[in-house]
Image (cartoon, rainbow, N blue to C red; front, side):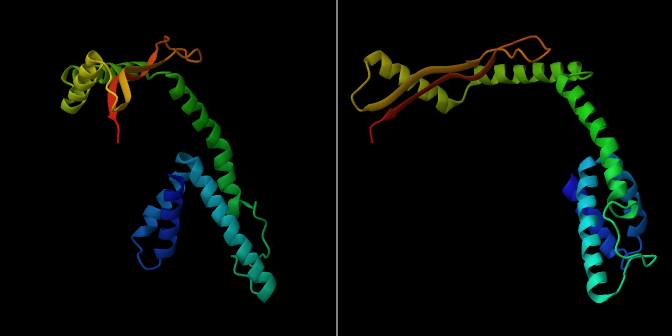
Length: 191
């Protein structure tokens, strides 16, 4: 979002003289993006610092000052260069970080998250009941191989493989084990 918003505003700056209908949109984006996207503040601030540096070099090299007001060279931390973006970044980054931590801990979102988990669990249970035709055929082949005794031509036989991770102790939510793999059966013949 930061790269995209920075590129969008920069392109609107470039095309404003040719398309005057972009002016209100560009002004709205420049007003909203610093308060919505801390990463926009970082990207736009770095871009403005780079532009300021190049214009300062041009002023020193050729003696032509292109800044409004004719003040050359300008500090990169001035309000018009990167100061406003750094101020927005410093004020919004902690707010966004706090909001992200609240989301991560599930504050205010438990009902939504539990509903999504129940829906996902129902879908997974339905999928397990149906099963994939090829998966069921492979499991039957492995069971038949194991019942008959592993043949010499089989290089690898895995039957009903499962991997379960223990419950996390870091979460405030009730601890539940996580199943990564359930009931995988494969047979790899020689060759």
